[in-house]
Amino acid sequence: MIELYLDTADVSETARFNQCFPLKGVTTNPTIVAKSKVGLTTTLANMTEVLGDTARFHAQVVSKDPHSMLAEAKKLSELPYDMVIKVPATEAGLAAIKLMKQEGIQVLATAIYTVQQGFMAALCGADYLAPYVNRIDAMNGDGVAVVRDLQLLIEKHGLSTKILAASFKNVQQAMDVMKLGIGAITLPVDVAAQMFSHPAIEPAVTQFDKDWSGVFGDKLSFES
Ligand code: G3P
Image (cartoon, rainbow, N blue to C red; front, side, top):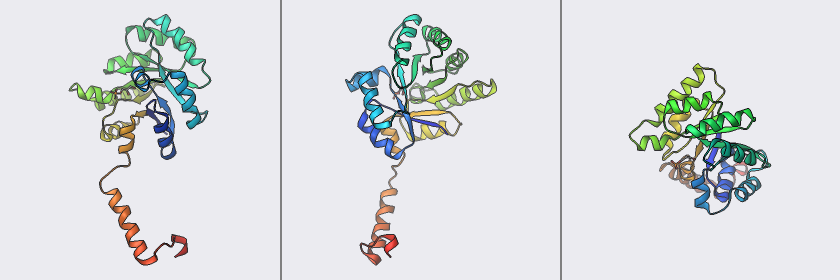
């Protein structure tokens, strides 16, 4: 089954969506954590309270050079959670991914804007690739096409890397990439909420209530 994540540091929204979605865990990035004004270690502890101890967390290093990224990744990996370390797929990041994989660290290559960039990260051993679908679209690119090509390359070359598609503005983008058979996706809270919002849903449910109570009043289904 595709792994479904929320792209957030908001613990109460995570609790909300964990009730109605089969969440695998949560992804964050430095911007998301900084906006929340709560440190990563506190957020991970609070997230574990609501998601349970089988949750997987994807958290990003902020170090700049490969060896510092590796040292930071080791510390993050030592946290008592299922941690995947996010590394921007830059020149330094690709070098860091190679080092991290030698140490058996779970790695996600992030900030992926091009097929070639993602493919190199996969060849360096990244366990996950995070192409930024909406950010690519917003630059007059085709985010879904980048994901399609990456998925094709992964399959053609028999790589075990999973695409964890990220950066969405609407459900159409999310559904389009899920149709490609990707291994994982992370949704921002507003796009997650769009999964069950459609102008016809509420009127349909209201009509059921009206028709039922018109004949059976307050009775429940099994009481009728
Ligand atoms: O986690 C990184 C990615 O999800 C970025 O999303 O919405 O800032 O483009 P966004």
